[in-house]
Structure formats: C-alpha cells, structure tokens
Length: 144
Image (tube, rainbow, N blue to C red; front, side):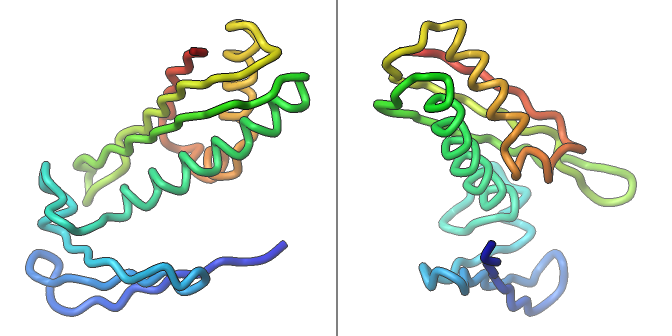
C-alpha cells in the first residue's frame, strides 16, 4: 500500500511562532498554522492539527462506510460526514478531548437499523478511528 506525506516548517516560539503545513503527496497546497489560532474559537484562515485530523477522519469513515453498506447489500446515494475534534488542557500540555462524527445518509436497500449497524461497524473498522483509539469517538448517524 502507498504512503502519503506532509511536512511542516515552523519558525518562532510556541506562542508567537507559526508554521506552514504542506500536503506534499498530493501537492494540494500549503496552509498556515499557529498555536494562538489553534486554541482560539475562530480559525481566521489558518488550519490546525485538529482540523486535519477531522478531515482525515471524515474521509476515512465515509470510505469505510460505503464499503460496509455495499457488503450489506445497500447502495449509497449520498453520505454527508462531518467530524469535530476537540482540543483541551492536559497535564502537561494539551490533548484531544473527543471526536464527534455526524453522519447523514441516503442509502437504498437498508432500513434505519441496518444503516445504524453499518455505521457502527465502519467506525470500528476505519483505520483513522483505530489510530485514534485513545480518544473518545461518538457517532450520530441518521438515515434520510
């Protein structure tokens, strides 16, 4: 299986410095990050490790769920997955405080119970969920 990479160039101190995060495998872009914006309520045009984890988790979960639904005999019309990753204090430093996955799906061939079971299974099978096993991950799944 292939490997993907990113790199960060950081300058300055923890509180006043900033970094440029580059998605090197895809070449999709370079994004600014800093601790003050990471810990603020508004991102103000910058990204954070938590946002990148949320993006990775929502994409991985959607892919895994589409496979599980197919194996269960369903057909995905649309999956809308969002992930919210929290950051909070820890002693010492900081930690991820939780991940909330929200799923709204349009699926043919599965009832609400089978859809909910597929979502729970996909959450457990998703490689990103496995990598983040030390963080509480909640799932709100609803079939449209």
